[in-house]
Length: 382
Image (cartoon, rainbow, N blue to C red; front, side, top):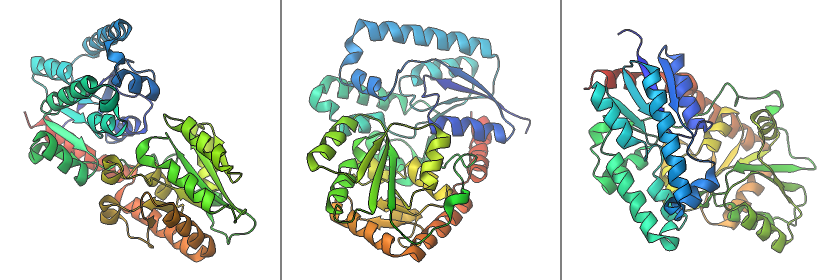
């Protein structure tokens, strides 16, 4: 088959790792990828404000009209193509994408990844604005029926889509998140040394409910009698101020909040961590996914602690690739940290075996080959 031309389409998050990786993986396999993108969302907080009722504002609709005008203009400038791929999040983009691909009789693939309806429920949008929650459900239930192929990152999430929206499993293809291992890879400082006067626990992320940052702070409170154990929390997001307030209430001198870092500096911080912290909430989202930070930690050969879940157990072995603790249980997390602090050989094994698992299952090359197969399948599907 000759090289395929792909339109990567939508108001997707342009700098989000999943979208960047999807585009780069396709290009690495010889596909000609043209981005047709328009900016609709200003950021995480903006999307949450719109979901809570901001969509009723005339200014939002004016912004949406402008965004889709630019998107359509970009599409017609792009010329002919073989496949359209809609990036994440693309729920609002799918009706337009389906119309455009129908007119040209082209296949449509959607990298849905996460459900914005499920995210809305986790963030209590239905409590603040029931109408908004119903609208999000309607838009997603319509959108999910439109593509020829639907790309999802875990079997658990695929099952949720099947049960919630009645999506045929014949349309679903699995592609893990992976990591950008051109950036996240074992660093020279990665040699695991016995704990000395400081044991650094590093979390980075967007302070959303499924991350369970409050349980990290509770664990830090339980470990205040171990001054050598420190916590670095990197990032920003909806719950940041609440978490900073909680840390002040607890008087946590062992916790440092750090603003979001550019990738080179973030990689340096992760490489210097004695242990990386994943997610510890118990939301449906947290139980059905293996977040980017976990796969990036594996790619960097860092020892990881994460909340237990079926997704984790299916992929990674406790004590071999990762250290699993009980979710929503600060004492279990604190015990895990103490165990790894006391066992440098265990940390070394987790780092080595976790990295080996990443190379064998989640590397850019492996996932790019899998994604290329899905594209070629889509090309002959219609």
